[in-house]
Image: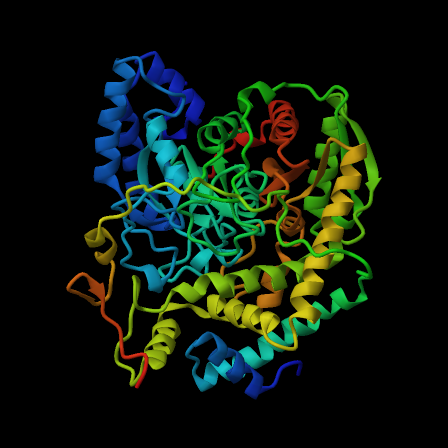
Length: 95
Length: 488
């Protein structure tokens, strides 16, 4: 298979995505199949071809640096799982 | 029109009745809400119904009409795909992650439709985060194809397409990253357009793949498509990729002939495994276009078409893996706080909050962008993207529009492809190149195979929506496919 079970675990950790052992086994098979399919690209000659990241010929879109009203904090915190005194409460990042 | 129920009208027919005061928006809206009560149990096109909002908006619309302040969409009931933020109305994106998310702001397109006199009957079902081709990836329920309830409506805008086809809304908005407006439009027998990348602001569209996503209309005919595009197109500085261009009045493009229009038929789009009935519909449609005055070139070639699917399934998941990193259980959305550490909380939040297809694409994208694989996959895909665009540009030097099938087959059965992701991905083989190249394209009803609708795909040059609208309109006016309604 194109991708090992260890690689599946590693990629999940890179994203901080929780996967069950079942998920890992299934994804190893499905992702391997899809990654094998990607090999069709290796047959395409891209020597000297520039990459395209998006299709509009726009670069460095600027706007004036002017103050504008932002959302009231209570509107933003209305969707917060754990608001506390006007802040988002999170687990300790450093232990 | 008097012999047809109000909910069966096109938006422009309804607008005519409203303008002549033959019906009120309130009456029209109540007729659509009653229709929803009758058929929604079988179709399941919506994640949320917003009856109270719709009735309030219909009363506002009636006041505007009375004051002579109406636009062509004022008071016409619509469905909005649940990937588009609507202030104060839950926007789930088809995901458990956003099951209880109530946006504090409106998407640009929602603002524009509100200004136009929106009556919103509900938020339409979709594949989770717009990832899918069948609407089976909704975290809540699948949607059923109004032409055959055992079949999928397509996806990811399957709820929007089914709602319009089943007369649960007179028009809808969807979003299209790899075919998510056009493929469900084709499978449900309605008109669906993906505008040029940059034509419609993505502000307030929950992001999937930012270089590919575009919002567009799903409607009962091409005239309505032009009206909705008029309402939503145009520059918005809150989306840095919104094109700073003037927008024409798209109704001007609706000319009922194709004199002098050069139509190209790219041979690579007649893919292996294509249904014979679909092929016959498309060939008939091209001949019909010739009869309307078009000059058809049956032998256009876009050699990199076969690489487009692989290119897309590297680029779109890569962008998705960056966009979906924002769902961390801290700021909004589902949150699991039972873990031992910050990272464990994040992992658990995503394990429950995301469904299988979303996890699969996050994994693919993270893999393609990871150390050691970036050049082989992501960079290579971006170079192939350049080739695909270049081939389109060359073809458009000789052709005004290109045509193909939207989907190589009519609607498939619910459950038929859920165990085989790659098979599901292959159903978008004709629509994906357009997103990769950033072009506009439309699906217009072009016949039936065994009672299931088939859509004709018309692709155009960047910002040449008028050319595809004209081709679609002339074809539509010469046929009756768009007038068929599913037996419900």
